Length: 384
Image (cartoon, rainbow, N blue to C red; front, side, top):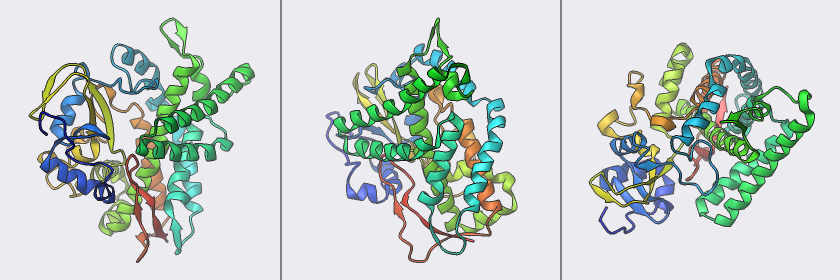
């Protein structure tokens, strides 16, 4: 990247969107600190991304024009809200939720057609993500379809950069959730004892969380959970369909699933990028970065950096888990990682235990998702 901010690449070009992983690999080798009008300053190397993650004073997370609790906050504010959120993902809560998660996975796997084509994203991955999310938060079934539509509209607005559409989508979500909160308040002592109700009782300092803060927390969980979990399930299932040796190994040794899931999702990223903004002039990757520079961390590249992982496409179960940025690092490491890991492990356990094989269809039209999505937009599979 030159000192003068010219466009080094176009993240929305057909070439990039056709194969994002290959494009990001190329940028990591050719121009690891790159500017574009769409993503501003993008970092592709593991070393540079880790440096940003571990220096929240220099690289602020306060990048959104919307309230973003706690993702878009810096210490000490971030620390206060994080202390409220982390207990919702405690080992005790995960243990209580595990049988609920397994029941959903079993039901969906048993409902898959055998020996014929199934559009796996729609029939299984998206359904698993939405049912799990609603069950975890205590949301009604009639919210499932609106939420799926909302996720799609949010992605489309993000891709186009349409500010009016983004505002409209944000307002739509706020309306859904504030309606839920109002009904919980009206129910009083009869309100269900679930996470959504519990958030109404949480305090920041000497006051209760207000509706905007609760909506922001739930929005962050929903965007992260629905889109990313669905993408993960699709990526994992496609990978096993492509690699029968790995599929066979995990059917025979399901105890390896947790490690294998993290490794497959390192190879094929379910979350492409995250944002920061510089708070002071700084040098990174050999480039001078001015104060106020917006920065995009390209997870999908950093987790494939050859200097850390060798051959990025090699499936290995002996890698150092601390190097894998699947759930981020530093003070903003994903607080919901225990839930995501639980959900994905159980999903894949039941999918493998209750089927004989998962295969790609000869000539089947597989379509990759495009930024800001990941994984697949169309995924026909054959299940037996």
